[in-house]
Length: 125
Image (cartoon, rainbow, N blue to C red):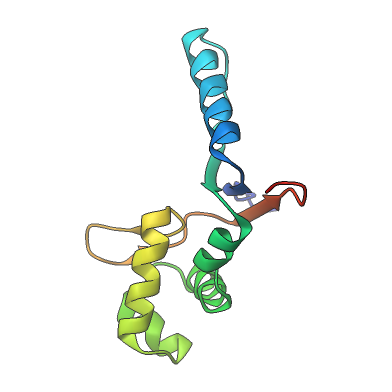
């Protein structure tokens, strides 16, 4: 049996600034007290609408395609997606800025996550 690949996961949250800063304070307290902290990765959005503006259907397809393809140039990814290079470049820039895609020093891009988990509380404003 082959070695299992570690699952790398990022959690997307829809939360207000109070919840975000409380989570950050808890992490700081844990670090100050030398408590073990998990290597979790989080990305917060102020509203579900903001999250959905980031993860459009086209960007979701881009993420899935790039993960399956592996490290790629923007031009190669655009060809595979059948989309314009400028549009894919813009989407990649947004996803890199959010931390959902990484860009290597040679300009190639890749998705470092194997799972993206999103959660939103329907009771939140």
